[in-house]
Length: 178
Image 1 (cartoon, rainbow, N blue to C red):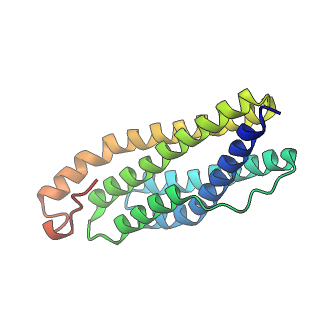
Image 2 (image 1 turned 180 degrees about the vertical axis):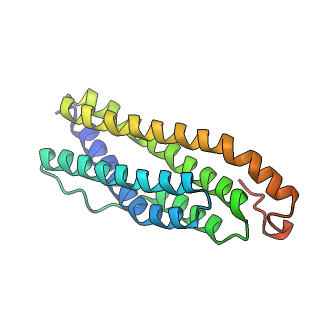
């Protein structure tokens, strides 16, 4: 069959996403705990619940494929989670730390948006219409989370700027790399 190569790639990418989502299940509670803003804490907790739903949807897809979701480590998410952990260890205070957490979270969301967009297109080509529906539902939730983070950033970043002007973090602990 001509689709065997793409189907293998599709399953491989789904495994990558499954591992990525499971890494997030561990990281999001830590991010919520590190956040200063109650709104940001609540946002991380809400996304944790959504992430549980994302894992369940992926499990349904794997079940329908007769495949195991295990067996792959998502190195991209591992790196993003590590960067987020570094942010949590910084000496930033209050809104400055929240601004950094939002940046880390948005990098995660953009990674997930790209990944879900890709597998959704694979599912369309492979004729997996039920999968497309589940994947696009998750994709929309990831986009909504990114929009919520942008909205929070518009509130928190000006405060972070004021905090920074008042010595919110020593220059030696400010992150300069991207």
